[in-house]
Structure formats: structure tokens, C-alpha cells
Image (cartoon, rainbow, N blue to C red; front, top):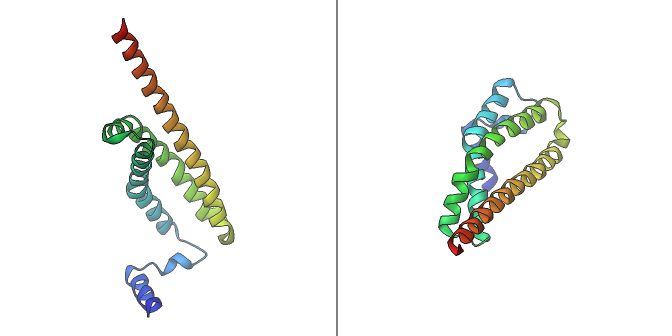
Length: 136
């Protein structure tokens, strides 16, 4: 029953091609554009929001992190992920695409952690400079 509903949804959405080995260039371009416009900005914002919240940053910390890091990081995502997707859909054999995507995701997560740490250090330096001026 569930399988038939899933098949119906897949056929209605016209995404039967998700399971095929070859993708035409229109499909590849459409996926890359949707990924860049919807998925990348949302996940970058989600990453910085959750990470700052887990670090105890609170709502103001989340707002500050998003203002400082979201824009440049989304621009980096727009450079990184379309190239990764293009390479994957064009050159990586189907059995290795998941492995390839996982390795690229690992690299991207490392980059996000790096950006998060840089922004944390900048905020700590600003805070310590403000405290030193207040003591003087």
C-alpha cells in the first residue's frame, strides 16, 4: 500500500528519472538551480542557527552569526555545490555517486566548521577589546 502511494507520488511529480543511470542536461541544470536557490541558503542558515544555539549563543548570537557568516557562506556554496553536482552527474558512475557525495559533504562540513570557528574568534576578539576599553 505504501509502496503504491510512493510510486503514485513519484509518477505525479514526474521524477521517475531519479532512478535512471543517465540524466539529460536539462534535468542536471534544473537540479543544480533548485539546489542553489532553495537548499543551500536554507541548510547554511540551519547549520549556523543550530550550531550557535548548541554553543549557547542564544537568539542574539544566532542573529549575529547569520549576519556575519550566512551571505559569504552561501556564495561559497554556490561555487562549490554546482561544480560537485555537475561532476557527479556527468562523470561519476552511478554506483559511486553516494560515496562521492558523502566525501564532498564531509569536505563541505569541514569548511562550515572552519567558517564558524573564524567568526567565533572574531566575536571573542571584539568582546575582549570592548572589555579592555571599559576597564581603562
